Length: 101
Image 1: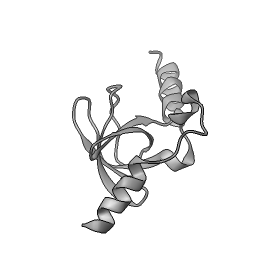
Image 2 (image 1 turned 90 degrees about the vertical axis):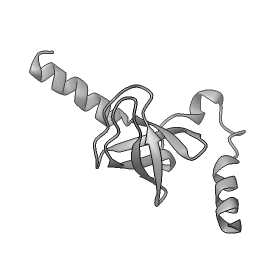
Image 3 (image 1 turned 180 degrees about the vertical axis):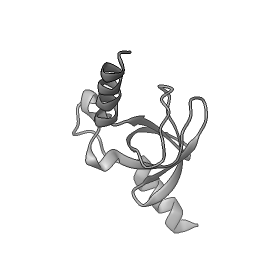
Image 4 (image 1 turned 45 degrees about the vertical axis):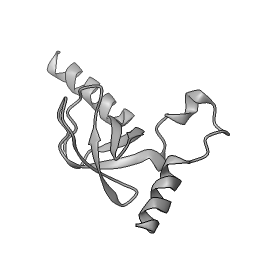
């Protein structure tokens, strides 16, 4: 149990004092995760973050499909809060344009 506790405390105690508040939650490579099980609005799914499977949800209500890249915004106990990457958002905008939506 001790190794898990050490790992978990390292995850929750990351030093962000060097970053300004506006850059703490910006997407970056350290925050990227891959959706393993589809995340639907109001439900949780699964993501692989730093080689570990985590339960995750998306507060914006976006449907995140398996294989999509997302970024981790925050952690609520053992569940990650994730959002689509900018590339996924841009792709949706382009798709809507081409579909005339």
